[in-house]
Amino acid sequence: MGKFVLGAVLALTLGAGTAFAEVPKPAAQAWSFNGVFGTFDRAALRRGLQVYTEVCAACHSLSLVYYRHLQSVGFSEEEIKTLAREFEVEDGPNDDGEMFTRPAKPTDPFASPFPNAQAARAANAGALPPDLSVMTKARKGGEDYLHAVLVGYRDEVPAGVEVMEGLFFNEYFSGQQIAMPPPLADGAVEYADGTKATVQQMSMDVVTFLAWAAEPTLEDRKRLGIKTLLFLLVLTAMLYALKRKIWSDVH
Ligand code: HEC
Image 1 (tube, rainbow, N blue to C red):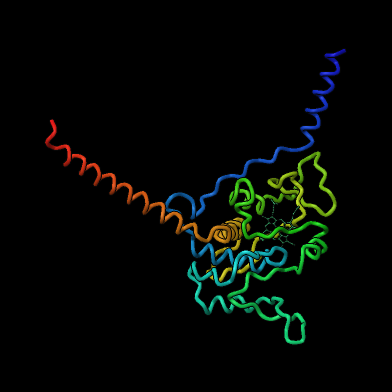
Image 2: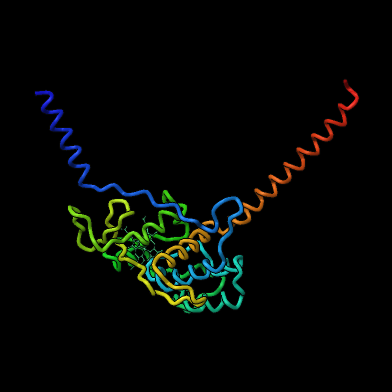
């Protein structure tokens, strides 16, 4: 009897286990900013900004990033002003006590698509598109995971999986059903530098941009690390030479 119950419990647990397919581990990508000497690929950053503003910004805010921050990665003041002017932000109150909208300025954070979380949910079938400012730091797997989710939509749903109304099958999202409609399709943007806008390319570019957004000081951090190591190396050599000198007549 005991054996039977144990068997039944085991069968049930294993059976339940197979109903949820295992979420695969995102593959590691060759990011330009990986490694000790890694830096953000400037061309990819520009393309990524374009993908964010033309595609993702329709649903996702980036409220910790300011337009002026783009100066640190080679955007000119004029370029930043032009970019900011394309967005409307709320300001005020004015002298009549009323809020008003005006074109964004370089000193504004990236404009949010929705005035508040409720409006964002209402426009997205109840799901909240999260702010993307520090998203690459907020998810296990970081950039590799973000890229995997962006390219992880499948037309053919595996047998036995039933996708709920309003959700989309995504191999890498936890639970494999995501409320975000596939945001990228080949040719969704037209790159100014002539790069072919495949889903793979746009995803790598926008994730590079989001990695910069989450850690704009990454390059400074690495540079300081390298300088510190060099300094320690030189100091060690000097101390060693000094030690040899001080002890040279002790035999
Ligand atoms: C039509 C609106 C819409 C667009 C456009 C859109 N998203 Fe989303 N996104 C959502 C919603 C809604 C969610 C929440 C999904 C959920 O919780 O099931 C989401 C979730 C996410 C997540 C979080 C996944 C997680 O692990 O929680 C990331 C990352 C993301 N989107 C990135 C992007 C990027 C990058 C773009 C542009 C290429 C983009 N999204 C375009 C609506 C959108």
